[in-house]
Length: 456
Image 1: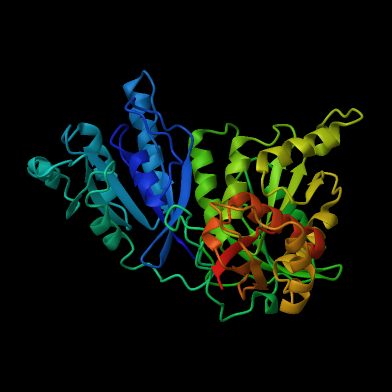
Image 2 (image 1 turned 180 degrees about the vertical axis):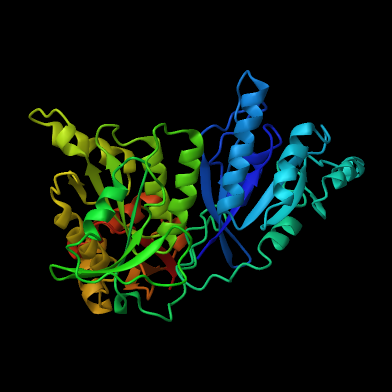
């Protein structure tokens, strides 16, 4: 399972800048103004073949200093609770502050790896400025400049020191491998199709996850077998009913709250990462009364990035006042937000009345089968090559790209390699065209797909 790195610290020390560098992109907004990061950000990266997830905890800004400090402490406590490695970021230019000392006091009591990182060391003249942070008693200090990347290599070596090497579902970020001539994932030793589907129930707090899990694992179930060794508050149970057979990953540890705060949202993201990465298919539960919000889209994106199957379950549909096209409009809104990966089952349900509950789990099992589907090379080429000949890749810089043949790669999720003479000239629109054609023919509904262009 991927390790989680949490970046903590007071506002305006460069957490979002470091987050962007660790993820190899610009996912978080960076601005000199304190408190820009209010929503929780998370992303993926890998370093020397070791995969990780990153959480940018951000800073909370309020006019009251007391509330400000209390919110920072809550964020740090949640990061301590859920992460594997904590990066405590301080500002070398501003020096040691009382808020840094408050955060350090909590971190010293934590039984987690804590790395003290002094940011904004932009030149050798600033190196001596970091020694004041030895007073925090957190060991070695790693000096970096997150903006330029100076010192981040040594920091990453230390962060991933004990992380496992990637062995399954490896996929580098496009920013780390910008060429279209990407390296496809390596073959897997274990065939995922030989195992029972692992289905995780994920989503925002108060979406109805606990109610759904209680129904599925209630008195009507045939077999429920706890599997030892699971992560805290994540219960794996063997479910057999109506001919369905799968492992249910219960994320009901995210309880309903009388008031949903930013801290609860942050907590749900960290739990979602754990649950998603240990599953094959995720049932993403959405509250129909609140609609498909940004947090739902964030969790959906995390599912897609991890190449997991997904079923969107719109709960509490019985509470919605309906007109002629209410159902259609709601579904279209969801598909517009999740583009370009919109080939996803959307099911409207009411857990309270048990409406379409069986259809939801039945669809999730079917998505698992779609994810495990293998297409023979001859069958694939007999179908796709005539389409390519009829609609060849556009000419780029006077070069004619000729795709000779294609094959499915032996990975746990659908991935295909297309062999051609000039893979570097094939762009994203043509990749989407091929993906859509494969989905039309072979039914990969609910499953993210990867397509690679390789030199023949």
